[in-house]
Length: 239
Image 1: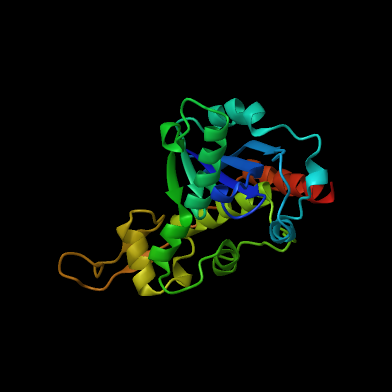
Image 2: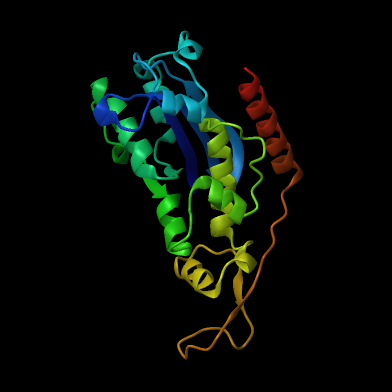
């Protein structure tokens, strides 16, 4: 299974108000493992960046003077996401901006659904944790994903964090931190990495069950890929 964890940064909150994409960051997962393949670029928006947006991501129009326009990178981007499942937090926001950019350039297939499927981790988190805060920051804290190096938002930085949150949220390794209702919802979606244990498992008779967690340790290659990603993020923040 090929998945692409995706995030964008923009000049403002709404394409309906003429706002544009200024950064795209994508990381590839294959069979729930980060492969080290990525798509990352800055994009010149041909308009000013709102002050409120600039405070969030720290990117100014001056930073983008030599960046390509979206139309120049669209084909490479679409090839990268082709036939994958996009993993996006608050997917409506990013998909809306991507489809707006494709429409502006007159692309013959401006709908993202014509290129990939979409999994919205915000919707998933709301099902698992109803009534709780489910922002990416809140989920990082809930699933013990280290976000200490994130001073400002960035598409590649946030994609890396989201990939680790998504794997934790759907892998079952954090089931001990979930209440019983959330654990049951997770199991009901078929996305846990553990297994039912013991003769008293929940079944047709409604008996209470427990989870035996399967703890998956990262390989040397995965640790090396993670370290390389941290170094890349650090270099982007220093640029």
